[in-house]
Length: 176
Image (cartoon, rainbow, N blue to C red; front, side):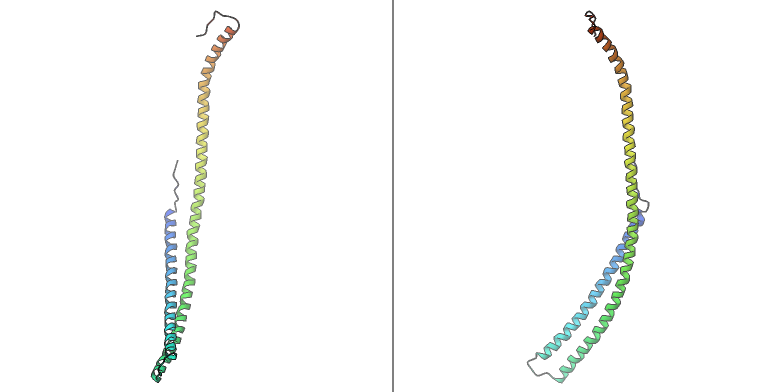
């Protein structure tokens, strides 16, 4: 019996590696987007905190402090626009990479399905081969049993005649 061999096994391994590599790139892009969002949130939180500190201050606020907070708020607003543009660009890259990942997975699945089909065909062939072997073995055993039982029947037939002759009333005749 021959073991299963898939001639495209190395191609399947390469496609699997390729799909994993493309998924890793997608994951890296998603992580970069999260980092941009976190940076944007940090700047927004700092702007909110500085404004809140100014509003809730128990002491009088100087014009310089008001100007600094206002400039920081303007910086936060401009930074937000920049962050949103970076996020939009990352979203575009992520969408493109998702297409690449889907294509890589499709190619991998195609070869996997081909492998499964070949494996099913191989199993059917092996089952057929085992059935033929079992059939041949059964036929050989039957033939051997017939040959062996043919000689026994001749002996049994002779013994049966002796028994019949005993049954016919010949008491002096003995079968040994």
